[in-house]
Length: 511
Image (cartoon, rainbow, N blue to C red):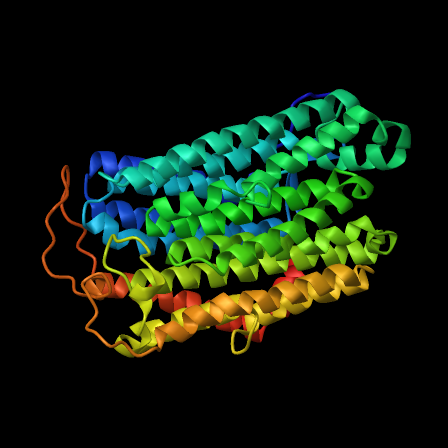
């Protein structure tokens, strides 16, 4: 009997494309030293990764690196959805980064290489079939972000944000690894499906104190990654100190990765009787604290950060139905998992649109500023203001932002079907609280201004003009109007399309 495993290279194609993008970006920057070529290679690589994930996923589930029935790589519909979304988010964030890269505020080669490396982790994460692959992929997604957060030259706030993010992430990773090690010590397995079957079939193992400790540590470590309350304190300061496009990536691709990791572990490995009550409490705390604190925010990125915390609570809410017997039936569990994934996809699209709108209304390379800086912005720039307003209304769950409305209805329906009507009521009450700050910002976009806007509120990023070449390379000769406006337009159109045909996402999420 041969001990050599066969490798399905087609199943691994999305990971090859993502990792190949990082290598090509590095070689292009090293050999050509032309920032524009580096950005083009990174953009084409991200687009190719998204297409590759969609094509491979459309052909049905593929498995590789298998030992018997246990596989470390399982690429199906949900993995394809996650991989394609992460790649497209990377492409969008790269477009939003062009103004800062053109101004020489960040080194182009290093910036694009780190984004591509992070994208690779996100693509692998969706297909992970064991705890080792899952944790390594999650760290591959996160590690480049430590540097990206602090990559802005001459910014003390950026350096402080990077240090905060690094310290908290190291602690979270340590806790997650300890939980995985304890789980391996109890069960002798690492593959997610084997862990789930063993803990379901052997209640004497499931009820051991060591098993409970392992489950708790895994949940706590992953809760740090998604900024769930009370493990959230790092997020607002990190988002606000990071460059605006990096904050967008943290709030979308990075959060999506953490949520997918948590969902995969809960769905396939950990016992629902133990995880359900914990997730229900986390969901209630996360959405409530996030919404209440967001009401008091005056800085744009901090408001989006706290609203992102609240949105994570909505995503975790369907998993809280596992606390009840009615929510642990096969049908109810499938609906809960699909609702969580679908909400996460809708959220990251709307969140990227919101960050794109803020970027389009701020000077090139500037931070998010305050809410007063956005006052009357839609009067000066109607289309950009309207796109930002649509994203905010969608995040609030109101029409015409149908994607956000469908997402919240999906979560509530999954909770009611799972017998957790009380948790559905908490979601509805928090959605009403969220209306206050989302509509306040939206109204401010069209509010009249009594004085002329200062330079901080002017749309300087739409005036290309000559830009000095950054040290070590020439200026990136890309029209800022075209890049930022295209990202804003595409994300807005994507949000509208998802709102019109949301069942497509829900069907993919349920596979």
